[in-house]
Image (tube, rainbow, N blue to C red):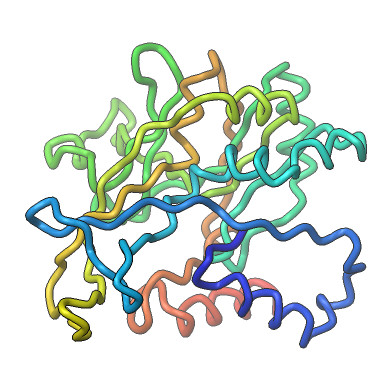
Length: 259
């Protein structure tokens, strides 16, 4: 799944690299949805063409986007039963998880996720929990400060099971979710915009972006299979340009594991 901002660049990158040896006919690329951007006064931001500025609406839009772009129907025609949805910003992520698949089938669940334990209470990852008796994830920006430090009887973090975007779904689960409307979360970010034809480059966050998260589909099901992995084997994220969770640190973790 790409966005309007990176779709052409992504396709060109794949073509320039001959799809890394993978048969092109098995690669399906589709664009996710968008939502308008608002400033702190609730006004629409404007782009260079004088139109309302839009931005991609979060990884949770994948369900609806797959349906609208015929991806789910294509999977059905190919008799695909299980789909692994993962994020491109984790270079240690295992694209195929046979143990997770087998465990999910054995437990007769329709959804599953691989997890790792939080490195520390302040680590910026969503965490698994139960909400109203249903499997859920709390995004790190929405977890109250007092809950970050909570520990259980084993002195482990009560909310320490990290969601690292390693999710497994049956095709029927994806079809079910694609018919639902997931809630939007608000992110406050720096976004360039135009005012009276002049480009404005903010130095501080200035825009509200609406994003749906993939894990907001989990409460649609009674149970979820969770398989705890190891950070050294499963998690080398690229979230920052420099410092922690940067291309440099991710490459170091990747080389350490595979060498």
